[in-house]
Structure formats: structure tokens, C-alpha cells
Amino acid sequence: MADEAKAKGNAAFSAGKFDEAIKHFGDAIALAPSNHVLYSNRSAAYASLHKYQDALRDAKKTVELKPEWPKGYSRLGAAYVGLRDYDEAIAAYKKGLQTDPNNDGLKSGLADAEAAKPRSWAPPAGDSPMGGGSPFGNMFGPDVWVKLQGDPRTRPYLQQPDFVAMINDAQKNPSNVSRYINDPRMMQVIGVLLGVNIQTAQPGAEFEGDDGHSEEATSPPEIRTEERPRSVPSTQPAPAASSEKVPEPEPEPVDVNDDEKELKNRKAQALQEKEAGNAEYKKKNFEAAVQHYTKALELYGEDISFITNRAAVYLEMGKYEECIADCELAVETGRSLHADYKLIAKALTRKGTTLVKMAKTSKDYEAAIEVFNKALTEHRNPDTLKKLNEAERVKKELEQREYYDPAIAEQEREKGNEYFKKDQYPEAVKHYTEAIKRNPSDAKAYSNRAACYTKLGALPEGLKDANKCIELDDTFVKGYSRKGAIQFFMKEYDKALETYQLGLKHNEGNQELMDGVRRCMDQINKMNRGDISADDLKEKQARSMQDPEIQGILSDPVMRQVLTDFQENPKAAQEHMKNPMVMGKIQKLVNAGIVQVR
Image (cartoon, rainbow, N blue to C red; front, side, top):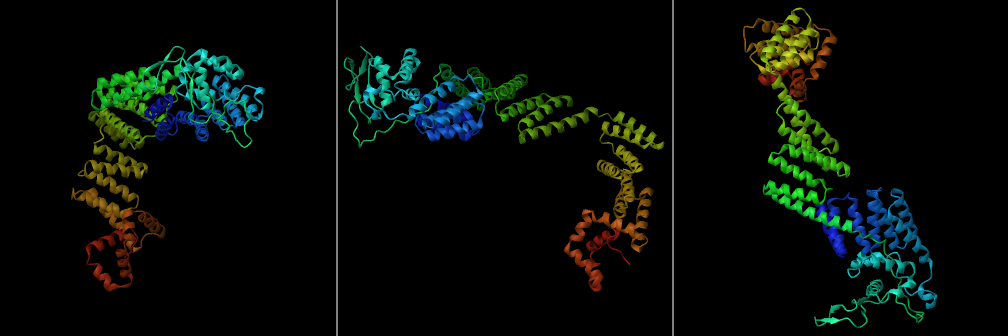
């Protein structure tokens, strides 16, 4: 996970292993590319290795991701200082102070950059006689703190107030270095700044010699040259042909804060507790998992994944109240920390899942549905959407079950019949609808409401009810009668004929169905004889062309050839008439008014 890689990077940085820190921060960025803190940390690691262009790139990315975060401008200013672009550094620090006017780190960085700018214009120390200034003048610049923090030999000294005061004094007046030259710590500082290894010891202290035994440190410090010093004080003028390499400045000092170190350590411990909790969860050791997540939360309370993970354990344990409490805590904490909206959505989804498990009535599902909708406003996760749809479906089913009462349904249907007899169709529809709600499986209620819709001219609604009536009870012939009548009024005579004929299969002697068949045949025959107006025929053909079955027949290449043969090849037409399937399709076209028989 990104937090684990970040913790490893922080640990490597604290140990001075900057290359390793850069690798870990890079791994974390690959997992969480929008986390501004990761780019900030890697920028600091690059700066510690004097890779200022890389440090600048990451600092810019930090500011891009989190323009209101002061630390990003601190990193940006430090990178520009390392590149000796003091104007840009000053501008970065000033912009950072606009976001946080009281930020001491930005103030210090600005002051150091402004002080370094005029010094960058001054001639090199070797161009003037030694008597003109201190030989240590170029050593104690604004980058001294980063160098001391980056070297494991001098890093512990930064915790000593008298050492910090000594370095501050040397920065203000480099000539004062001579006052502290007998302090072994100052000799160590000079060695770090010059790039040489100076072996020092406290007076009277012991250090390990070449033979592995302890020796008394009574002689002056020994200097072992590992590389040529970049700037060594000398009383001899430099040869004209020699070119002294100017030491590269480094970024602004990184503040060393005990509280920040403690926080990092606690966070690293918290991540270890979380991993232990995950392992116990996979083993279904839920009590142990809860203990680890709780410990992680106590160590570091700014990662809501500790809370959501514990909520997941409570859900598995059936401790629903505890799970909901943790989900609410995760949402509250996440909002206060401006956490990733996906994490907040996850907590809300888990709460909704818990509420579903607790639900017993349709009313209980309302709270779960509300929470799922809130989660979707944070992040439209497919899993959350699926759970929402399922909750709404179950709620609807429960509502129907809870409302189900066949006795009341029958009473409402009788009331609807009374209003129907009085030609009060809207009132009748109201009572039939209530009857259907009370007993959704009553085919008679749908049939009666279909009759009302027919009287009101609401033919599509009536057809829908008639189809539902037949679906519930395909032996109830009244449903076929209702459907056939509606289709007849819609001038779909061929479909009405089929409906009536289908009803007669269940009740051959039904007079109402037989009358329907007769009326349909009369209309179809009139159409075939041309006894209908051109407008009626045109309207009939337009409606028929919208029928998918008619469209399928007309788009069939075989049927198109058959129709052509009927017009142009009588002999072939005679052969086609022997095929029952072909003739059935021709009859459908005739009934639909598409084909006329003369």
C-alpha cells in the first residue's frame, strides 16, 4: 500500500539513505499519484543528493496538487536555492507566505535566500587576499543545515541547543568560527562542509583504533583526505591556470522537529498494527483483528482505513451497532482531514450494508437507501449502485407484502364495480388500483381496470392491464375479451382477431369472443374489398408498419421474392401457396392492410 511505502521512505530518509528513500517514495507515488506529501518528501530526498532539477520537478508537482499547502512552496524555494536561482526562490517563499503568513519555515527560507542573493554576486574568495575576510565565509551559507542534517556524523548535534547557537553565530559572523575551533563538534562540521573525513574525539574520550582496541584521544584530530576539498582556506595565491570548483548550494534546511519524528514513528507502528490486523482478519481471528486496528487508531488517528477495517470486522462478527458507529466515525474523521472521497464512500457503503442486514421491514430499508445514495454522491462505485438497486427492490417487495390483504382488496374491487355501473370511471379506477395494491395477483382487478381505461379512451394503459390479466391467469377468458376489444378500437383488427381466437381455445362457446371474431373479419374483409377510405387505409398501413412482426416479414428476402412472384409470376405464386408458413405470413400482411387481394 502507498502508506507502507511512504513509511519506508521516511525511515530511509531519517537514516540518511536518500537513494533508498527516493525509491520507496516513487513506489508510493505509483500507488497514490495524487498524494502531494509523497512528491514533497521525494523532493527533499533529491535535494539531499544535490539533484536539484529532480527536486524542483517534484516540488512543482507538490504545489500543483496542493496549492494551499505552505510546505510545497518551502520545497520549491529550496530547489531554486540549490539551482542558484535566488529570484525564483524568493518568489516561491513569498507566495508560500501568502497562504500561511506565520509560517516560520517560509520566513527563514526567504531570509536565507535574500541573504544568499547578494553573496552570489560577490567575487570568489580566492580573488582577494586572505586579509580581506574570514576563510570560512563561504562555508556557513543557508545550505549548512541541510548538509548537517544529511550527514549521520553531525545529525545528532542538531538536538543540542548550544550546538545550534554555535552554528547560528558562525552564520552571522564567519570570523567567530575561530572561537569554537577547539570544539570537536565544530571540527566535525568543518569536515562535513569541506567534504573531508575528520576523525575527532571529545577530550578524554575513547575511540576504537585500527587494531580494534580503545585508545586515548590525546592527539589533534587526524584528517584523512577522501576527496579534494572544494574550498580550503589558503594563504598562498592560487595559480592562474587552476580553476577552483565553486561548491554547489543546497536547498533550504529541513526543520528538525522531535514531534514530527515521533509522529512518523507512531504512524509507522500504526501501519504495522494494521497489517497485523489484516492478517488476523484473513484467519477469521476477529477479536485479535479488532485489537490490532484499535491499537493502530490509538497510535495514529489520521488514517480512516483503520476505522473502516475495524468496522468490517464488526460486520463479520454481527456487531452491527459497533460497525455503524465506526462507519460514522470514519466519515466524520475523513471529512475533517479532507480524506480521499473514495474512502468516505467506502465507509458509507459499509454502513448501508449493515443497515440492510439489520432491516426487518420496508421502513427499515429507507435509512440504508439514503446512505447508499450519499455514498454514490461521494464516488459512483458499481458495487454501491448494485447494493442500492437490491435494497430498493427488496423494499418494494416488502411493501407489497406488508400491504397485502385479499379481503380489503375484494372490498375495494366491489366499490370500483359500483362506480363503474354509475359511469363514474375515474372513481372506479381509483378503487381498482387500491385493490391491485392490496392483492397484486388478482386477475379480475386488472381486467376491471382495463375496462375502465377503455371507457376513458386510455387504450395503451388498458392494453397493459389486459396483458397483465392474461399473464396472471391465461384461462380467464375475460382478459382476452378486454384485450381484443382494445385492439379493435386501436384498428389493429388482425391482432384483435388473433386475441379472440386465442381466447376461444380456452372457451369455445364464449359468445363475447365469437362476436369479437365476427367484427374483426368484417373489418378485414371491407379492407380487402377496398370498402374503406384511402385515409383509413393509409392510417392502417402506417400503424402496421410499426409492428416488429410486419417489419420482419417485409425485410425477409424470401418473402420479398414471394411478393414479387405474386405480381409477376403466377406459376411461382401457385407453388408458394402450397407452403403453409408462407401463406400464414401473406395472411398477416393482408390483415394488416399492407397487401390487398383483388
